[in-house]
Length: 218
Image 1 (cartoon, rainbow, N blue to C red):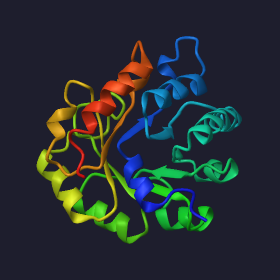
Image 2 (cartoon, rainbow, N blue to C red; image 1 turned 30 degrees about the vertical axis):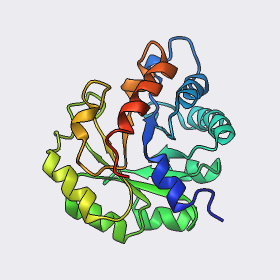
Image 3 (cartoon, rainbow, N blue to C red; image 1 turned 90 degrees about the horizontal axis):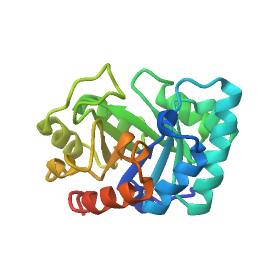
Image 4 (cartoon, helix red, strand yellow; image 1 turned 90 degrees about the vertical axis):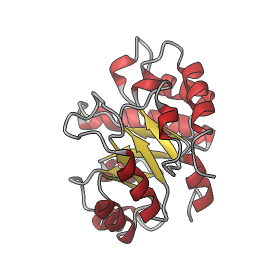
């Protein structure tokens, strides 16, 4: 049985927070995730590239305990096996990660699978293969992803118009540039440092949520 309906998933795209432990400042990741959720984050992805397997599993379980309390979708970046092990709500895959169809076989029909897309062709293919949503970018310059170039507004809008599943924009999105995405037909934005590098995570999240609500398609 699906934990989140299609309508709930679409609404959850609004403010999608991607973790990064770089800015913990003596706090734990579950603690800062909770601050983001208190501020109104609607979706959480754990993305921690430099942890050993056991440490990642332990951390992922700790974050899940928080997201479960808030009934907010929670996915694991790349790691399909860990997503299944801890019963996360799903997984987010890049173009070079575990094949979508294989991930679906492992996780089953009711889990959320998001896919990164950079072209209309990739987006259409991902939807055809059963993706539940798309992460599209980088829409602005970002230090998080050094292997992708900025996406034009025209390409972003073309992707949104080519698929029927939710699209979340990602890449260098901050409070001071988010309104530039108005008119692109996105369902929400995904951010990393705009939330987790903030001095006051809760207030930064509130500010971002207020702004993103002005630009998402209704």
